[in-house]
Length: 239
Image (cartoon, rainbow, N blue to C red):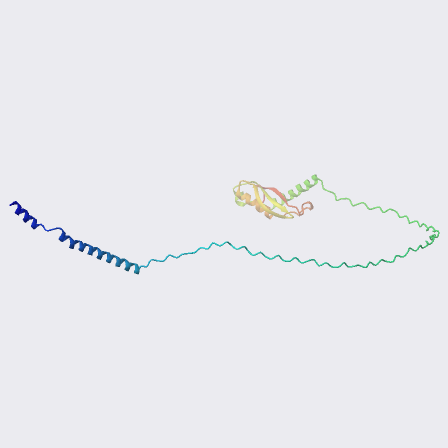
């Protein structure tokens, strides 16, 4: 029984050499096809994309040629001129001639000129200068100014008009006026000392403006002088 089973088992198992041959053939055939396909693809790719050729650059290292030397210019030779002979003319020198000196002339005797005496004139005596005009002394000038100031006061006082309203109210007093005087002209008349009443002060200014001024004395002509005059208001006056 055991032998029969072994035989049966041996008959059922196929041999391994028979099926391995077609498989190896197929594998080899497949590899060959892959290689052919890969080779044809590489050849087609190489034809479509050619490999660029490398350019070869040749470098020639040559030594620089020296610059050509300029030929030296010939130096011109100096022209030697023959010496010129100058003819020198020697002047003829005459010997000096000695001339005898003439005798000196003797001047005739001179006769003295007659002496004429000039007439004697009397010296001219200059006339003495005229005496200067008399100069008024300080006292005399002060007296003349005081006299003229008194004349101005009398003229202003004579031109005074007492204000009726002030007389009715028995207002009295005196005011001092000041003004500039030059050659009979009065200017800048104003009150420097009030009487205490506006009516009296205005009347004093009016009297100084309307007064008949006496003639200007000689010592005041062409001069400007300031005068201060008191104007009095008395109730017993007629004006």
